[in-house]
Amino acid sequence: MTDLLAVGYPWIKAFHIMSVIAWMAGLFYLPRLFVYHVEQVDQSSETHGLFLTMELKLLRVIMNPAMIATWVFGLCLVFTPGIVDWSDIWPWTKAAGVLAMTWFHHWLGLRRKDFVAGANSLTGRQYRMMNEVPTLLMVLIVLSVVVRF
View 1 (spheres, rainbow, N blue to C red):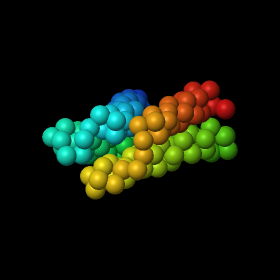
View 2: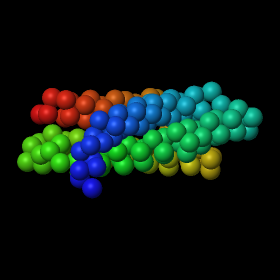
View 3: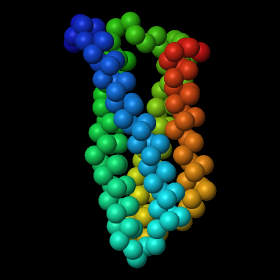
View 4: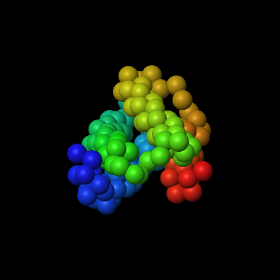
């Protein structure tokens, strides 16, 4: 199995990068949809239903599959011989960033359920601030992998 991972390494890495890009796009866009949903949409309007549909489709059709693919290809990279030296610090900082990113993804899913139930309690400003979380995590993850600090 490890020989197969070593041979497929460039392909696995390419698919990992593509899935991360798709996941990050969703992580940036969903909180922005929440901002507009809170600030621009009346709960009784047709637009409310449209936003619920857009948020659901983004989460289920793009973000969830991209997150799963990111994890699958990432774990394949981890198990490829010679790629990760766990005595270094960078794999641990990257892992912490990925776990935090996954937590944030699920937190967004819970906020979507709040909109569905009519129980959203956050403001547009709070969603704008939360929209910075994936950026900070991306910086941590990319610097961990590229600079290997």
